[in-house]
Structures are given as structure tokens and as C-alpha cells.
Length: 407
Image 1 (cartoon, one colour):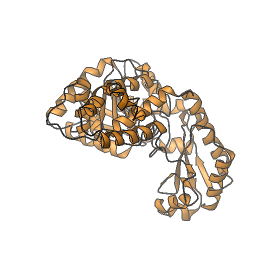
Image 2 (cartoon, helix red, strand yellow):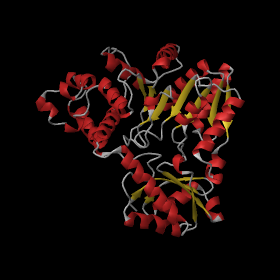
Image 3 (cartoon, helix red, strand yellow):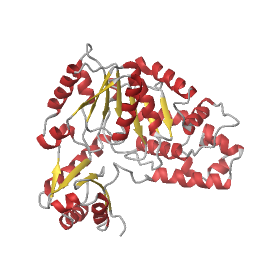
Image 4 (cartoon, helix red, strand yellow):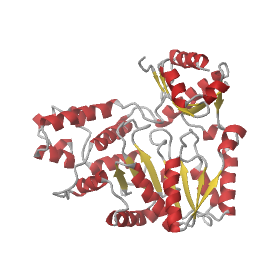
């Protein structure tokens, strides 16, 4: 059955039209023009470098003006100065390694929560073990989902643990993979100048094009994010953005050092740097540049959008509230956090023991048979990432019908 309701954007967003057009026309350019001088000029300097007669054949590439322009667009949507450094990579794990190294160089004890992405925590833990640093984990998941603590209570709990354990660094998710907005800015501000973390890394994988990040407040040193979820560029592309001038020089120096000793190895990162500096190496590794192009198209679509991001986010919250309010009519219970901690991601927990013990893939297949794509975790937990426009009564009806059928 075809998917009629796509609620899996928190895992892989449906490719936006602009990214689709870029993907399609670049495939045609590669097939019809090939690795010619025109092709090289396009990658370096963008669509404007093509002869007009050739450019008209590939309108889906009109957004591309080179790597530097793409990075400027990113800074625009993140409300950062034009001189902030941006790193791009095929593999997000490479950027997490950079973040872990920076944290361990600046900090002795790094605070995380029990809601961070496990793969990122594994990289951080391994680096801390290698460099003799400490990771302090604060358990907050139960308090958020089962006790309903407020944002201020969460800030107080994190700040108290930070001070009690003598922490001096943070790695926290702007939005966790389970949909909780962690109050990182409020936490850093509550710590004050005396206890300010020496380095703060924000995992923004679930944040870009989803929630406002308020990076201009300079509470964050390094933002890690990607392009295949809420940005809807489809092709994975990792991004690391330096957010504070005070620590940017360190990030760039450590990046160069890790590349020189082989601790970082990402062909797209190297090739994008060559394109940006116009210093292409004659014997560089062949690289798939499509993720750069689809990400640039999706970011440009954000900039050109006629709707305010705050309005889109309000619709996501409203959609989540409507589904949560009606879930009690079925045998599913919404796991809702206090309002300031909410995002456009909603968790629903099965009441029926058989559903809770069923393999996640089997439960997911049941909803797919009803035309609904979403994520299922062990224990009968559904994760639905709600659309940024108000859901129709028909869509809500389809979802509630499936919740009743597959209780």
C-alpha cells in the first residue's frame, strides 16, 4: 500500500521538491556533459559559470553558486555571522570525532543526559577514555516522560549535577531523538560566568529546519547537524558549525591537526575545501558531490520560504497536541513532556502487552499496511514526526483508525 501519511521525518525526511530538482538535473548534467571543463566550472563557481544555452537545460541547478555560497546560506538560516567556520562531511561520525576531541582538549568532565544519541556517546566515551577525561550522565528521561517536570526544574537538575560533579563541558541535543527540547541556552545562562562550560557541543541533528536554535546568544561553541531529516535534502551530509569566535581558532587548528595525522578522513570534506579555496588537487579521490547540491537546494528553499519558521513549528505542536488528545480513545498513551520541552515529535506507548512485546519491525509493518510511515522502538513505542502544516481531518482520521486497529 502506498504511504498516504509520512510521519518518519525524524529519521529520513521526504526529499523536498528543490532537492529533487537538483538531484535530477545534476544526474542529467553528469550524463550529458560528463567530466568536462564546463562540469568543473559548475562545481567550483556555480550555475552562473555555465554558458546560457547550457544553463537553460538544467534549471534545477540554478541555486548552486559554489561551496562558499552554500555555507553563507547556512549561516543565514542559523543567524550566524558570515565569518563563522562551517565544516561539511559525508560521514557525521567524522564531525563527532572532531567535537569529542575539542571537548577533551578543553574539558575534564563532560556532562550528558541519558537521552543522547547512543552512537555519538560511544565516540565521546572512547575519546574520553583515551585522553583520561570523565563523562557524567544525568538521568532525566523518566522525570521528563513519567513525572512531567518543568523546564525550570530540568535546568535546575542539570545545573545542580554539573556543579556537584565539577563538570566543565557539555554535549547535549537541541532536540533528542525522542523529541525532547533540551534547554541548553537556559542551562548555560543559569550557570553564569563563574561556572560557564569551557566548551559546549550541541547535537542539532533533529533541530535544523525544525526548531529555532537562537545561536546568536553564543551559548554553543560547536553545532553538529545533518541534512537528511527535517531539512529534507535526503542525501546524508554532516555539518559542523563554529558558533563562537572565542573558540573558532581552536576548532580550525584541531581540525587541521586531525587531518594531518589521519584521525579525520572524509573525502567530501577535503574536496569541498578544495572547491572553496579554488585549489583542486590533480590526484584527489573521486567524490560523490550530490549531497552538497541537494543540501544547498534545501537550504535555499528554507530561505525562500514564504512561511515563518515559528508558524510552521506552531502547526507541528498543534498537530502533536491533537493526536495526543485523541490517543486516549485508542489503546495508546501519549508520552508528553511539559510544554516548553515539546517539539514536533510525538511518542505514543502501547497499552496492550502483546504490542509492547512485539518486534518493532512487525509493529511498523502494521502501520505501513495502513499507509502510515513512522518509527517504532522496542517496548511498543511509536515515534511520529508531525508535519509543519496543519493536518487535515482526513489525515487525523487515518492515523486514529490505525491506532485503534493496531492497539
